[in-house]
View 1 (tube, rainbow, N blue to C red):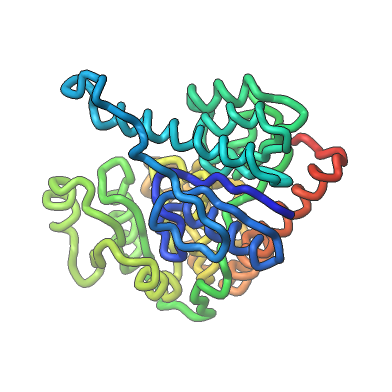
View 2 (cartoon, one colour; view 1 turned 90 degrees about the horizontal axis):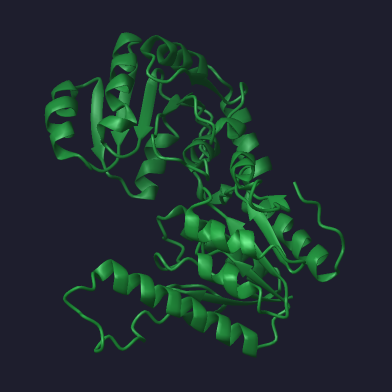
Length: 358
């Protein structure tokens, strides 16, 4: 198959990408290319992939005629980004692709898909925000297909769009270190160090149950760290810093439980999937966006803002079978499964076979 992939314009697509969308796109593009497909990807300069790369141009508009003092950087960036996606559409319309896979998360490729002679598959990562929702609602044609990252996300999009498939975030199991053994009563928490992420609740629960805790993440709120977190640090509660992925894996595979309390919506459920890949069960505050990725075999949920409930989940999760956690990650969230799902969907679309709408 000859496939055009429209990537996110937020950051380069590389093997070292830290963004979840970028990781998702890199894994898929490389997998499809390795399987023998012709892949052309439109992405940010600095992207590093094995396939053909066409970079977005974010400096193509002449701004001399604008009131530059009034034009904010965000306005200029918005306009340049839109223009870059329109340029990508122009190139795609002039070449002989079999199918376009829109992984951009942007409204323009959905809009321009309606003017292409070939089908377009769009992956939806986010809630139905206004601009993207507008394009999706207006372009529900027979050549437009849509994928959601989770069933919960599909439910949010259902009033505005058909969803033909659910394809979750995927990992390369070989890239994630796994250990059947862990340190006893050792927890790990990863996220932004802000009050909203309830780190104070985590610390209190660990102290009450005599768990040691590793804290990983950026000090996004320095006063919160200085006045709330730092005074609680010691031999039991340790801040490791904002670790690179490889270093984080080293600690994750040693932990007996990973605690998830993120306030931001994590459609990829990567925090859960990464822990399971390392063999580490999860204790999580109840959240609609990750509940489908965590079962009673691989972890436990706690009620939000409830320390006693988190203590119970912490103890319960730490006793889950690590081998089972790893098996779940490999079976349901491996890159091979994701590539197979997409490949089968491409073939159905190109063969004009019925594609079930969830």
